[in-house]
Length: 331
Ligand code: NAD
Image (cartoon, rainbow, N blue to C red; front, side, top):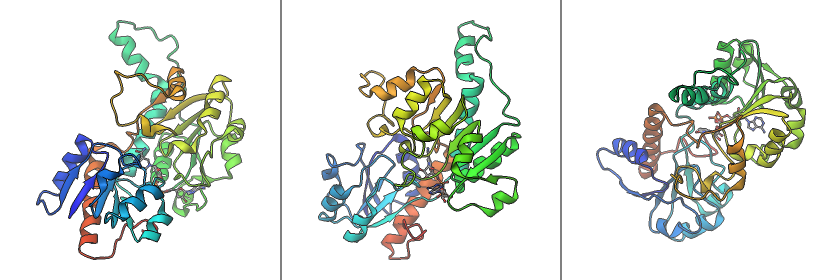
C-alpha cells in the first residue's frame, strides 16, 4: 500500500522503517504538516499517516476523498484534529494509537514539576558559569502536597501513582472515575473542589468541546494563590490569555506546558534563526516561573517503537480487510 506520511521527522522515519522492514508498504515521507495549503501532497494515496498538528478538517478530508483517501492512520492517541463526522460521512476510516507509553507522558509531567520547583535548569546554567550561589533556587517539598489530576485515563492514572509515590495527596476529577484508583487512595472530587484545594494541578483529559479552556479565568480564580499548573495534554485545555493574566497578577505561581494552543506554527521545527511572530508564546517565555517544552512528553524510544508498530498494525489490518481494533470511536 502507498502511504503518505505527513509531518515526518527523522525519528518517525527510523521507527516506521523498522516496523516496515520487509517493505510491505511504500512509505512516502513528507516533511510538511497536512493542512488546506498542503493537501495536494496527499492526492492519490489511499492511506495517509498523520500526527498531532496535521489538520484534517472538512476541507482537507473532502479534497483527499475525491483523490482516493480511504484511511487516516494517526500516529498519536488524541484525535481532536480530525473532523470525525466528515470522515464518517465520506466513508474514511480513522485509526489511532490509543496507548503507546502512558509512562512517557506521566514521567514528563513529573519532570516539569521537579524542574519548575527545584529550578534544576537554572542551577545547571549557573554552575557551568562558575556561579555556585543558591540565591533564588529555593523550592518546596512535594511530600504532603495536594496534587489535583484532571482526567484519570491511562496517563492520568500513571501520574496519580507517581505522585502518591512521592507522598502527595492526590485529588482527581474525571467524568468517569476509575474505581481501582479510588481503591488506591486517590480521592475523586468536584472540579471546583480540586481547583480550590490543589497545590499542583495536572491536566490529563482529552481536548473536546467540553474541555476546551477548562482552565479559564474563572477556574484560575478558584485556584490556590501560587499554585502550579501543568499541561501535557492539549494546548487548548488552557485559555492562554487568562493564564498570562494570572501569571502577571502572581495568582498562578508556576506554569509547565508541553502543549500550546497555537503550537502548529511553532512546534517540531527549529526556528532558532527566525523571528517568532507569536507574541503570546514570547510573553510566556519571558516569565521565569514558566517552563515550556515543545510537545516532547511522548518522546521516548519505547513510545516511538510502540507508535510505529501499532500504526503499521493498523494499516496491515485495513489492507487485509480485518476489523480495525483501534478505529477511533470503536477502540
Ligand atoms: P484516556 O482516554 O485514557 O484518558 C482520558 C481521561 O479523560 C478519561 O478517563 C476520560 O474519562 C477523561 N475525560 C474526558 N472528558 C473529560 C471531562 N470533560 N472532564 C474530566 N475528565 C474527562 O487518554 P490518555 O491516554 O490518558 O491521554 C490523555 C491525553 O493526553 C490525550 O487526550 C492527549 O491529548 C494527551 N497526550 C499528550 C501527549 C504528549 O506528548 N504531550 C502524548 C499522548 C497523549
